Structures are given as structure tokens and as C-alpha cells.
Length: 104
Image (cartoon, rainbow, N blue to C red; front, side, top):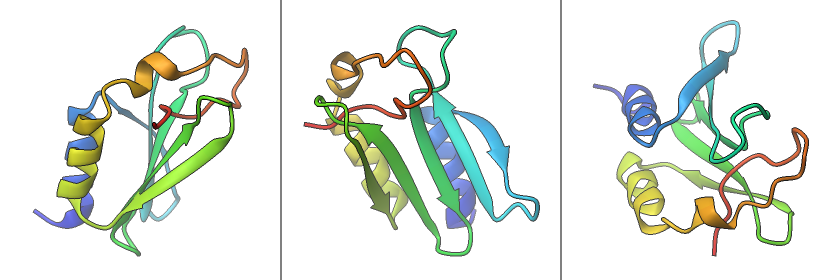
């Protein structure tokens, strides 16, 4: 299985669902709600076939948007597993601007 598909599997294992893809299928967006399911997904992962990477977008406890890019699937899985408190720290913004889990 190629890295692109492994990133997809890892995202799904963490509870993310596919939201949309580019026209040529080289980029996939996954989203996940941690609270208030009627809002836009507040966690997002962009998986890029051209760069063989996955970028996680998240909000910090202060509400700033941040990101972390992974080139190895195992690093993404380890990071997601090591940050169980991110979901508790999400501060709802009442709109679509909150993107992801927060980090410590």
C-alpha cells in the first residue's frame, strides 16, 4: 500500500471522514468534529499525493490556527495518539474558522 493510501487509512482510524478532493485526486481533505456536530468540521487533515505528506490544521488554546506536516505515516499516528487532550482544549468559535484539535 502506498503512502497516500496509508495516510488515508490513518486519518480514518482517527475518526476523520473524507470531505472533498481535488479534481485530479492528488489532494484529499478529511474533517472531524470534536464537539457541536452541527458546525463545520473543526479538525482537518490535507493529504497530498504529490508531496507524499499529510498536514494537520488545528487551533491553539488561544484561538490561532496552526499546522503540522508529516512525511511519515507513523509520525502522524504517534502524534495523534500522544495528544489526547487536544479535543478537550478546542474552543468553539461559533463559525467555520475553528479548524482542528489544539496542541499543547
